Length: 292
Image 1 (spheres, rainbow, N blue to C red):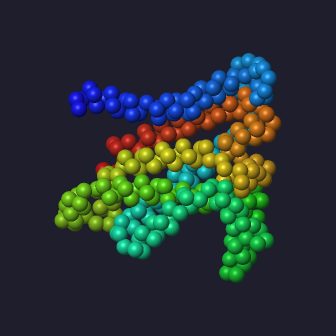
Image 2: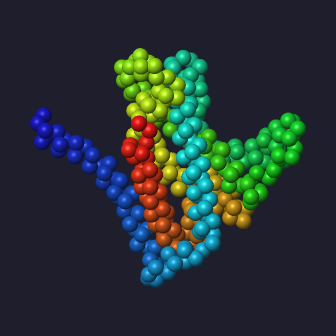
């Protein structure tokens, strides 16, 4: 097969998937941007109002509360899921039965629905029958018992453990694959040169898998900014908008009070915020700024 024929073969093979992606992913994004300039209830005619929806977003205290909560979730996810997954991957590089069992156990939450996980953690946090308050009571730490999902001061932070537990398995798989692709000659050379422990991690391992780390951070940021189902099941954005994030704010405006135009504007702002944070993170994590 010539190079020209091979290129056409690849193009034809990718064409169906590309067409579906453009139809069901890219096209709705542009439609959402379009309707962000309209006052539309989802039915009937749409009235063009220019940038009024975006002005209202900037003036909405609930939007800024949701953005703040979302940034907390992003920071906790990036600083929790990615380092924890890397640590577990480094500890489980061997192929014994125990290591395989632990890897499977860590990945198991990825198989479960986020709705199921939200319901499980609802019971864990339950103030009367929840296992967390029960354990604190048995340990003599009654002063630490709390309304984990009912106290506006701590509700958003109570959502972080289930979010980390749910998605750490994905990044574990990424890092396990990256570590297995490091040539054995590199590890042998590092061992001969006396590099071990933290020195080997900083000078050999991390530079070899830095591209995977960057990919994991991008996925983590994008996933955290659009997190919805678990938070919606556990708190619905309450109490008093204490756990409101951008996705729940958009959902409540779009499907609860039927402001489809305003919800479309919020989704466009979410895309811009996500793109900005991802670009900034990648600039910070460039190879010339990373460990070498």
